[in-house]
Image (cartoon, rainbow over all chains, first blue to last red; front, side, top):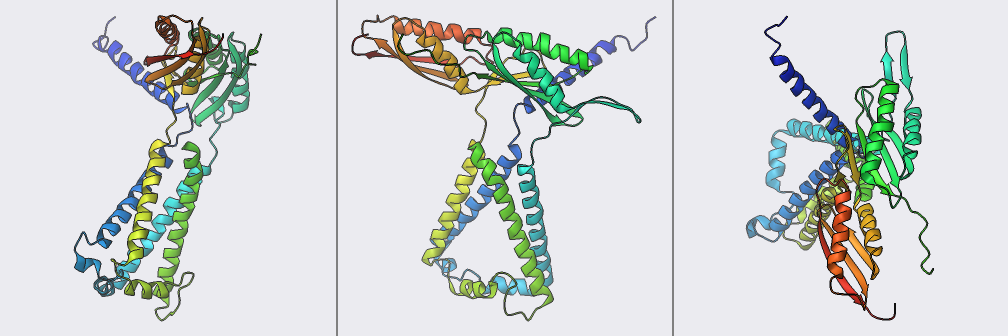
Length: 222
Length: 179
C-alpha cells in the first residue's frame, strides 16, 4: 500500500539525519575543551572600551579636537549644569549603570571560576524509577577499554557537556609507533560501539585528544 | 595566553562588580543625604575639586589616557590570542572529533626524521598549515638527503588522518666533525 507521502519520506528522513549528525558533530567539537569564548569576548570588549576611551582622551589632551576644548577642565561646568538640570534622571542612570556593572561582573567571575560539569548518563528516567550511570563510572569504563587498544599507552575519559546532552572527552596517550588511523578506528568500533550498545544510548558525541606519551628516551650512547 | 585569561577573567569580573557597587552606594548616599560633605567610601568631593581645576591639556591626563589605552590593547590581545592551538584530524565517524596539539605532531615528525640515515639531529616546529624541519646532516651526506627527509615526512603526514595536510619545509644543515 502506498500513500502520497511515501516519496517525500526518505528526503525528510535524510535531512533530519543530516541535521542530527551536524548537531552531533557540533557537540563533539564543543566537548574538546572547556570553552573560553565568553571570557575572550568580554576581555576583548572591555579592552576595546578601555582602548577607545584612552585614545580619545589622549587625542583630546594633545589638542587634536581644538586647543580651546583641551584647555577646559576635566569636569566641565557646562556638563555639570546639564546634569543639574535633571538630577534625578542622571542619578537613576548612574544607579542603573552601577547595577548593570555588578551583575555583569559577578556573572562573569562566577562563570569563569565554576568548575566544568561532569554530567551523569541518564539511561531511563520514569517518574518513579531512573537508571543513571555516574559520570565517574562511565568515564572509567571507557578509559579502561581504550587503554586495551594496541598503540594506546594511557587513556583518560571524562563526561562533559550539559545534563541533557552529555558528551565524552577522551585523551589518548599514544606510543611513538602507534598507527593513528587504526587506533581511531578501533576506538570507534570496539570501545564506543560497546559503550553505546551496553548503555543503550543512541547518540554520544565524542571528542578525542591525541597526545604522545613520554616514553623512556633511547640511550644517547649505545 | 589561555592561563593568563583564566586568571584575569575572574579578577576583572570582580573589579567590574566592585566598581558597580561603589557607584551605586555613592549615588544613593548623595541622593538620600544631599547635604553630605564627604563621600561614603570614596572621597569624591575632593576628586571633584581636583577634576574642576585640572584641564585636559595638563600633562598627567595624556599620560594616564595612553596608559589606559595600552592596557586596553593588551587586554584585547589576550582575548584574541587565547585560542587553543590545535590540529584537527578526521574522525572515524561523524559524532567523533579528533584533534592533537602542534607539539605532538612535531614529535611524530621529529621521530621520523631522526630515524633517517645520515641525519644527526633535527628540530621540528609544526602548526596546522606548516611543518618546518631543520635537520643536521653528517658532513659526508649526499645532496639528495633533503628530498629523502621530505619524502619521509610526507609519507608520515599521509599516514596521519590530518584534516588539512600542512606544507613541509625542510632545511638541511651540515654538521662538522667526526660521526
